[in-house]
Image (cartoon, rainbow, N blue to C red; front, side, top):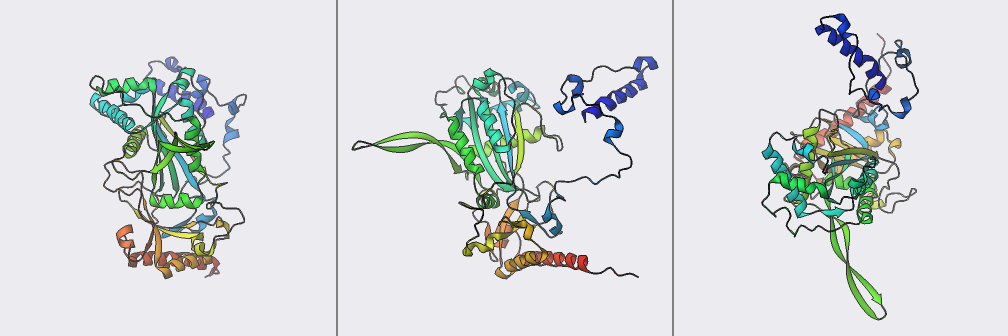
Amino acid sequence: MDWARDIYRPNIIRQLKKLKAASVNDATTSGADPDVYSLREEVQPWMRGQVFEPEDIIDPNIPDEDSVAFDDEPLDNLYQFKTPQGLIRDARIIESSLRALYITRDNAQTLLKGFENKKDAENFARSVLATLGRRCVVLDGEHVLNTIEDKWTGNVRPRRSLRSQTSKVYAQFRVSYFINRTWEQIRELSYIAVAENAREELIAAAKLTKGAGRRSRFAPPECPEEEIYRAIDGFLQRSIQNDFTSALARRTYTLNMEEMPIISMESIEVQETTSFRMIKKLDKDRQSPGVGMNGLVHYIYQKCRILNREPSEPFIRASARVDHEGRSLWDDWKEEDELPSHERDLDRVLVYGDIQKSAAQGSEQKLCLYVLDGKPEVLNIFSITVKLLWFLKNDRVYGTVLKGKVYRNSRNWADNRKAYYFDAKEVEESLNVSREVLRRDIFDWIKALNVEESAANSPVAVI
């Protein structure tokens, strides 16, 4: 791509200049183009010392290949079982996503000037201060946020100046589990973080009355590095079964510092002390600061996003990683373990997704069979049909809501669902589908799978 920019972009600029130049000689050269990375000495190391000719890149004899879409997954063995009625997913695969706002003294004004008017910037600054004022922790510096992102998504950020490393950071964290419109499991870590030297900028932008933003009662608890790392590792080390049920129920968690009693025995006396530890809590309250914080993060993220390009603004942190290998199937799982007899039906789980009309475009399938036993390679049409018939016979199905994130004022509140396993009497109220329609959809999927199998195995008639 760097080579293409170097060769073609200057030529295009020269041709455009010829259209307006009075003389051809006036357009023979073009000025420095700041958007050509290699001209700014920002070429990636693998390109240094290499010279590419056009024939090294493109062979005119090679036919064009189809683009590989993420939803198509041609390399996934389970893709062959996809029909208009349903699809199959390996439950071991989950996307760890990070969406965050990190406001520093260097980027605060850039963020605030991005609003359409000063009133909107004022309201945003007030919302951030109010959110952190209700619940946040104090971190030792920016390097803690960098380590958290490295753990969660594997994205390593370059070390910045010593000043930014040592400035304390006020932060609020939230972890959300959900299944998106393409039936992918997501565990998302979101947070708002404000550097100590940037808080004054927000207070000034919020135009608070004197002393309102500096009131002494703003004294969030200190969070040692090892505590936040332990909490993050706790989420990453959960079993596939736990993450899967959390995604079905769209569970959300907040991370809080709380006092924990410590009982020690010294000689014959019992002494009780307290210590602060970071713990996770279900974030069920619609008025929770975690809901508001998550809404602010996604509002700024979508505001700065252009089509499918990730925002590049300095105050936005966005990265993701697909996790698959090394995840335990259930708690205390060992490689040779088998599901206990009373849970054998959990080897493959049929899920019906209530698709919200307001959701972004995605998969149109409302049924998905998740493979939870870690053995997707043994699947075939017969075993899939048997499992679907099992759910038809027992008249039960798992369920979830397929949509994006939920903001504070959303009418379609669907996080932290009370149940994710329903019988025939419950599906209409809980999944917005009648029993008859659900059974027909499952049967149509069975029929489509076996029709394709029959067509694939039948001899071709020659006329």
